[in-house]
Image (cartoon, rainbow, N blue to C red):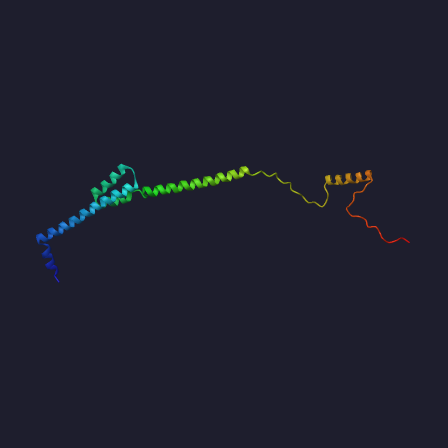
Amino acid sequence: MPTLSELVSWMSNPDVSRILITILLGYLILLWVSLIIWTTKDIISRTNNVIYQLISIALVVMLNIFGLLIYLGIRPSKTLIEKFFEDLEYEALAQATKIKKDEKEKGKKTRRKRKPRKKKTRSRSKSKSSKKSSKEQTEKKKTTGKKKSTGRKKRKSTKKKK
């Protein structure tokens, strides 16, 4: 296994250091381009405002990872598709509640209004109007001489009188 001093001397060789630097720079350039592509796709899916899209892409192009961090802080929270489905859901709920309200209103209109019922009061003593009606009935009986039948028939006695 090589020692630390051997590794440092190997890296200090101009050919090896040039290769390592080239690989590192290539990696950073690929990272930078991939960040630009990702930012472009993301911002296009989040807004239709072209100026906002250009500003977001320019941040990542100029400032690299720091621009990406700034973009992540200012980007819209929802994509256009998420906003569309949220609006669709909101409209569906609003329409459903409107239909329910309309049905309730139609139900109220078609129902007949009931007449308010008179409260029956029970009292042990007869009121004046009921006393008059009973007096009138007795007077009529006296004048006509007829008694109202109570619905009961008198039984004739079958026994012979002695």
